[in-house]
Image (tube, rainbow, N blue to C red):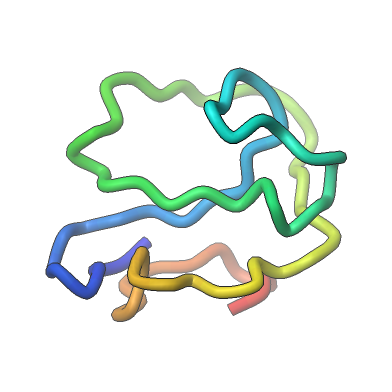
Length: 77
């Protein structure tokens, strides 16, 4: 989670289920990384499941997160 190049608060995450207009790549692919403005997220839920970590880092964070505010410990960044 961090600020975008436009100073929006964004989250960078890896999608492993659900719908995506770009479609999902095989699990673990760097093509499943997504960036969203937190203000655009209408609902979220905590799931009781094992932690999943993608096999590959995202190729780039692009403009999604240029100033990091928080990260998951022992994750890629």
